Amino acid sequence: MSEQYLSRRAFFSRAAKLGAAAIAVSALPLAACNKGGGEEGAASCDDGLSPASRQARTAIGYVNDSTDPAKTCSSCALFQAPAEGAACGACTLPNIGSVNPAGTCNSWAAAAG
Image (cartoon, rainbow, N blue to C red; front, side):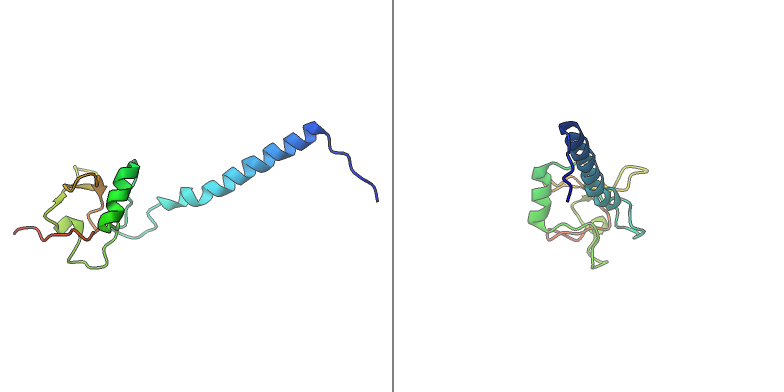
């Protein structure tokens, strides 16, 4: 059995390559997250949210795609329609941020009209 000598330079070179490969592989699922997935109305309106906004959304049970077509953000009294050409609207509840018109939460209230 022969022992192979691994120099310090070769060790660090291999470690750097392995680290770069690990980072690249771990980024693949993240790149696929916001592709839209072909589901109509399932656009993600989560980009740029603060941790406080994410926590507030979790507290009210917000989801990007409602399972009940009668209870979507677009039919809620608290919803503000998106600007022209934008996919996401806004919620008037404090610290919620942008919301998907097809989304819903536990604070849904029927719009007047």
